[in-house]
Image (cartoon, rainbow, N blue to C red; front, side):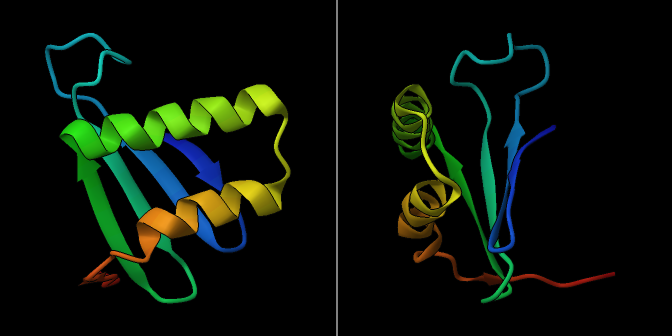
Length: 85
C-alpha cells in the first residue's frame, strides 16, 4: 500500500497484489472523496486507465486543481460510504 496523493479533496492509495511486481498493473487504487465521504476502489482496466491519465498529467506538470478535477471524474462513481472505526 502506498499513498500517492493527498489534497484537501481527495486521497489516492495504490494497492499492489502480493507476490506481484509493483507497478505492473496488478492491484488497484482506492480514491477517497473527503467532502462526499465516499470511496471507490479501481482495479483492472479501469485502474490502468486511471494510472495512464495520471501519468499524462504528471508529464504536463499539472496543478493541484487539474489533478483534483481528473480524480473527481473517477470519484463521482463512488458508492461506498467511508466509515471510521
